[in-house]
Image (cartoon, rainbow, N blue to C red; front, side, top):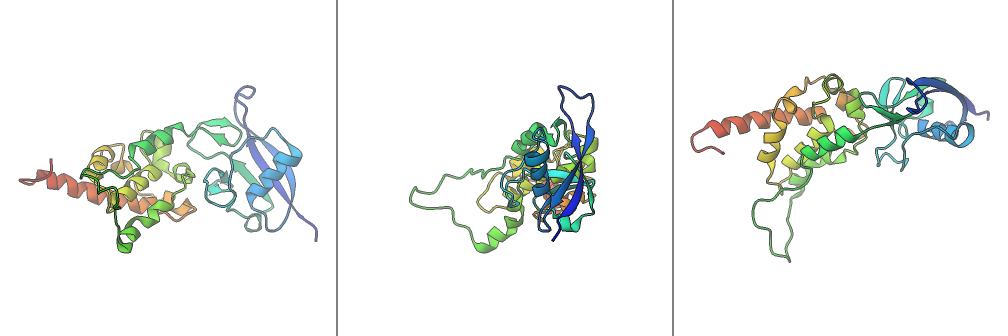
Length: 246
């Protein structure tokens, strides 16, 4: 059986040589079961060794192969050529500075993820060394969905608010904060809401929902943000009540 010829139009940019990004075309003979990442790897291995991009696992786990495929933020290892036309445009994720070709600079988002304090915060004394923090299955299911985030940053590329205002903390960081706020072992909810409840946090979200639409792991960060808005409002009014939290 003859292989399908896929016409790839890939954005190129070398900051040492180019004043602005440009597109280069490649013709790739593809197997029917290939993902777009396989086609890009073919270009790298057989047609143009200068092409730069990120990838690692090819199993929708590492999150490093996110790119714009025909204008849609996607994992290239999850997007199959059988579902695409014969001509495909590949660009780096939107809303990020381009480092080179399809590689973007993620420093800003890495800093914002740290603002979410993505770890369990305990204020009570720890249990004895021979004991563990126990958790019921029902308690796990409350936040399990939000643990599926692989930090592919497709949600940031789709988020119009982050594109307009880079100071917005953004969907992945807020969903990660919500994951720990829902964890029965955690006691840092108030600390996170104090940080994430300001004008650059949950209230900056305009609830377009594009982040949830493009999420390859169905994390639904838009729902997490709206739930955090409710929790933030509750926390605010509890502090206003006599004898409330300080």
